Image (cartoon, rainbow over all chains, first blue to last red; front, side, top):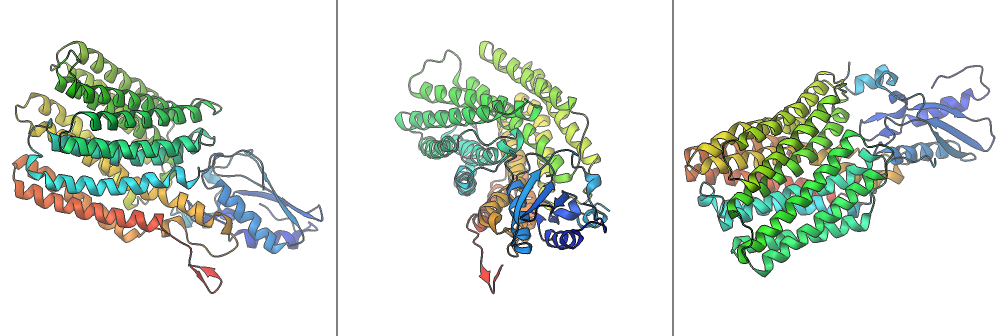
Length: 109
Length: 425
């Protein structure tokens, strides 16, 4: 997820991104930000936070747990907003989406 | 939460009892081997060896594979498990059926109890087959992994039905072929049809996930499916209508080529992996493949040698080397995840929770690996040299291995979150 400093919601993005680093893919032991699973968050609706994200595979056995984690941390951050997840498969996730930090945690570099 | 359909891990009741019961059966297997240590190098058609083989094949191998399959079918088929009640029923039937069969074989009670045991196992395999095929058919496309799951389930049912017919044949002879010859067909339908093809399909899916690797040579898996089935069908057809002779080794060779195609796929995945460090549990898997190849190499010796020890050694390489090795390695790559999902899924992100790999004792898995290598090597040495004291020593190592495996499985199964000052430890 890329941050735009001109966005009116930059403070929310930063807060959300920091919180989402607590959500770990239990299988890989790396947080979903470093894995590149998060594509964006829409705060434009005052009562909602709509998360656009993917999973490493459509049949990821940890999919429910990861989504629970996203909802839990964002509800804690934004108690006034309802959290919705928009799960997408395009663009398809691949290893190139993993950050340098994530690759280091996985022992890939 | 999203409503986008994603593969779901089935409820714990469809999976966990299989793992726990299999670990107990593994301990029972090691105790039975110790009790019958003197008989392990004699002819395999004996009450105690038959009891041991069925404990290994049904109580240990099939039991844990059923549990793993019910967990993995939704992952492989991208659909929820077809029926959880059917999975639970298959567990009850397999457990009672196996207990009856092992008890019957051990005391050579070949009438009612053995036949009932066999019938319950057939019913269990039928339910498993319906569940596997039902899940696979409801998925969007029939990929190679799903084909392996369905074909192996069919072979399991065939194996169980032949086994039941053999059990009936022991007390009411009706099969017009020598009992021991049909026993060979039964054993190989199970080994090359059920175990080999199930493991081929599942490992072709899981190994790339664990290694973060990918092979583009999917054609190798199609070749594996074709060759493994071609060799087995030829063997069963020829072996039923004709005496089992040396030409059957050609059919084993065809299955062997199919096995090499599958291993070639895994090697290619390994060469194209991102995760460079190979952990202990994956080494278990790698070693088990070596034992499988050794089993194929031993087959001509088992056929030609007059000494039945070689046939027993062939079975030992397959059951205690290959199948046991792969189960020991894969248990802690699958079981902790479903327990973690049950205990922590809703808490994820709310509190500090342990990772799935922290649910078992990692140090014990390292001891388990070296104990397995020592136990297997010493058992093979004992059987080759025909030294009973070496075999007994090896079996004590197997017993120790079964105990630490059981302890670790129990640790995962009965894991409970501990709340401490607002965090979970």
